[in-house]
Image (cartoon, one colour):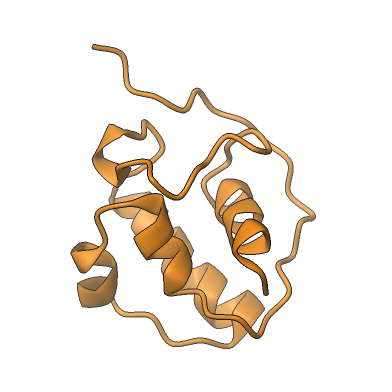
Amino acid sequence: MMAKERLRALEECLELDENSLHESMLLEHLVAWDSRAALNVIALADEKMSLSVTGDQIAECETVGDLAGLLGDQAEPDTSMTRSRSMIKPD
């Protein structure tokens, strides 16, 4: 899976609008990033990509790019869910 496809898979997983994530974004600045989102990423990796990702690995991620890097290069995302959420936390 290409980097762009990993970003799209994360957008689906985090219920964000398409093309709203960029690799340089800090996870702590995303409204959608919380403990539930981290569990959803673990489930995405396991169920859709047959990858094992741990909470410790996710905790080490600071950016969207770090998180996308955990998803590897070998799987296709399930893009059947379509929901959106405001992306950036208000100041």
